Length: 118
Image (tube, helix red, strand yellow):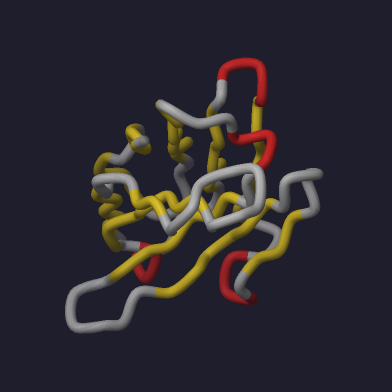
């Protein structure tokens, strides 16, 4: 059971990136999935979450700029990030929450670095 995150990089302020999180060993249809981020010297925070039926929630700082989505057919969750700001710079992690028909414990991806310069 694992999550493989990809798509990070270095961009200029105002540009976009799309992160991908491929689940291996379990079916995301039964899991609530989320993206977290951790900036240097700060606590890890949840950025966006999608329930197993696709209901999305966001931290206030990314609302209207980020979109979380899932493609159950390829067992992958995405985070589309538009209008990026320097304060979005962080390591981004995908996460699968424990659920009755999903994973038994939290599963974390390996993290992907996003760097936004002004």
